[in-house]
Amino acid sequence: MTLRRHLLALALLSSAVFGAHAQAVLKVATDATFPPMEFFENGQRTGFDTELVEAIGKQMGRKVEWVDIDFKGLIPALVSKRVDMAVSAIYITDERKKVVDFTDPYYAGGLVAMVKADNATIKSPADLAGKKVSVQVGTKSVSYLKEAHPKVQLVEVEKNQEMFNLVDVGRSDAAVTGKPAAYQYVRTRPGLKVLPEQLTTEEYGMAIRKDTPELTKAVNEAIAKLKADGSYAAIVKKWFPVTP
Image (cartoon, rainbow, N blue to C red; front, side, top):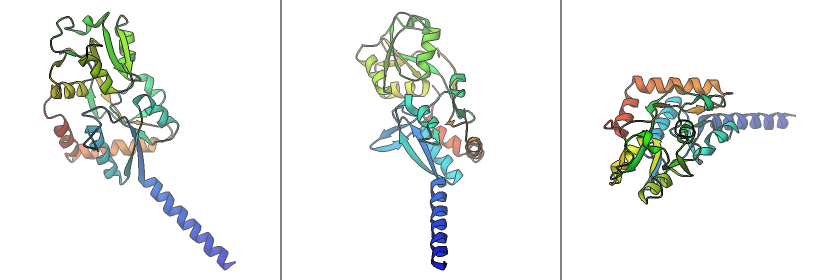
């Protein structure tokens, strides 16, 4: 009987230790192909979202475990409980809010159009009508263009880089994507430009399941603390030193 109790005590202790370890991990889904928000450089994961989430994890006392998933699969992975949170330059939309909760907005962005620098036919969003426009599948760009610019010929691709490449080689007349990524790309690749008129103004949020409101609250509190102590401003300055 004593041995049985001893084994039971060990089992309970092991379970508690394992549970505490599991709780200490924050599994975050991302599509790390979207500089400057999240991407790999020299084999290292980096970017604005990446650094911010790592800082949030540290503030919460939880180790961040990244899970790489194509953008269109981020919210399904969250809903199916494969991950705790999805962070990948995700715009807060009414449609997405039906399925998941979002943290408070953590950065303002918006959709813009990018074309070749010598393109004289597309000067404003209205000029996209009838043109081939590349977009990443599953993003706000797709639904927005279908609604606001139904005459656009959408060219949907899986990866952010493919979208830009199509403009580079002339297979698309333009690409529509988030402002940070577009400006980052034209800074590093000559021969392209971003139209000065934004298509939309959007806000980024971190997606969290509806059945974990305590996590949403904790992440919001961590973001507020990072803003209060200057850490958030330092990360913004590092990745967005000049506002376009």
